[in-house]
Amino acid sequence: MDKLKLIDKLREKANISYEEAKIVLENNNWNILDALLYLEESGKLEKPSVSIFYTNESRYSGEIQIIKNNDEYKYKAQSGYQGIFEAICKFIDTCNNISLEIKKVEKVFLKIPLTVVAILLFFMFWIIIPLIIVGLFFDIEFYVYANSINTNKVNKILMEVSEHVKDIKEKFKKDVKND
Image (cartoon, rainbow, N blue to C red; front, side):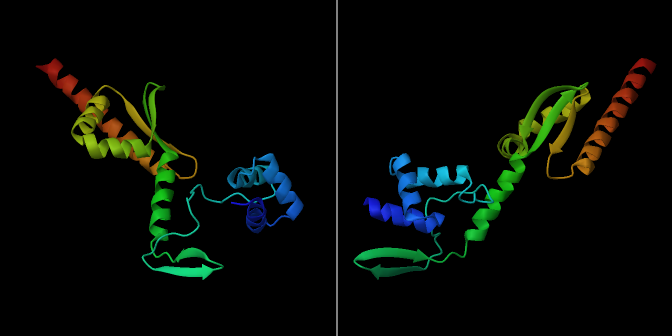
């Protein structure tokens, strides 16, 4: 792409002057993506509010319009499915910010994101579920932590399960001693 077109495109995207766009592009080896990132870092351009990035401006909806301007073709797509993809990405991002801690007597053995736990349960549930049950009998405790979500109810349930398993262990020990 010719340098003038790059300058015009950066001016459109960032709403800056011609001189400023030229200087920013020159400092970033005429790479428009690097120039946009530089403007975001310097605070002259607002960063996206969501950590989802797309490789192009339009998203596919199944309906494509061809627009011809000055021997240049543009493909314009209206998206009906953009909400699904964004919802899935937001769900995965939320699960990545929730972690499961596996600990014994206040010593943390493992801290993993909920996304990893879900994937492990999906593919290896016949191994993971028995390990969790056996772990409970060896006084291993599970806690869920998140910054943006209240996990008190989940942690209360996990503590109740741990207490019930401890009660079962104690009853079993008493029965073995009595025999």
